[in-house]
Image (cartoon, rainbow, N blue to C red; front, top):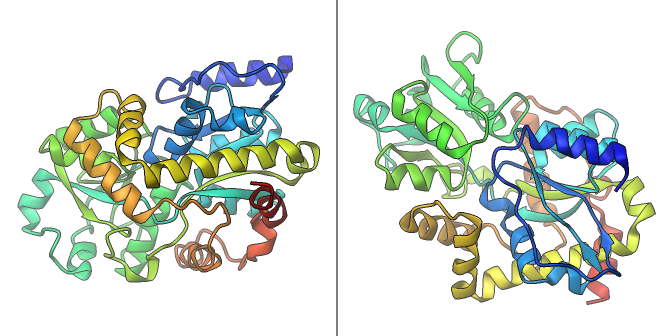
Length: 347
């Protein structure tokens, strides 16, 4: 690792929201790939599974320690600057990079559903008298005048809020207060508990933990089917740049193959997967862990590394509706179809 890269990642570690996860020692012959993620959400779990089970090493790559960043924008900046080979965040970040003229390429999907929910505090639910069976229209109208937490500007969490506000004709600057709460789960739960925010847009497992701790409940969930137009919309992705693919094609093929093996394990071996998830979330309540694993396995994981074109186009349409992009990005321009096909063909 070069000195500039090492210094960058050391600086990034100060912004991370949880300790980076380690992996078993790799063979000396493998290619090192620097990987970073946003926060510690369930979408990054395949990286942990692949590292712990040795799937990346078996395919000639070593992902080392995954550096966790406080926002997806920081992940994207590190990838395009060459300080990271691969980023794991949300497709919102990929579109932001494409909008800035970066040649960004999706290598695989980490969550084939929108794994971010709107979580409501217990006080908000009691005051509004709404619950998970209330109509989506009533739920959106109840957001008016409230403090709503997001991880940061331009994030997938903000994108969901902006989309809902547009559906309800609610002005984002006049009718609500968006609060940047970061990506640290305990800290975000505290904002709900103390009333700093009434609702928060956040990835799993925050909603599951809030439910178990009786802090709040999942209020709006695209993955649950609350917004039918978002069903099976691609959200979590791992990505790189075309330059990195050109320079490290064989390593990218190996990474995709290891990642696909990790996803297959999550789907086919629930017992082992639960044990691995306990290592990934050592402080998560067992009930919240089970709730998170159930929803992730049933809605978001695929053993096929090639992203769904339908899911991709739904993501494009969603981001256009939210006002985050204007250009209708083409599937083949954003998805690294050739290197993915090479990986699948060599398995």
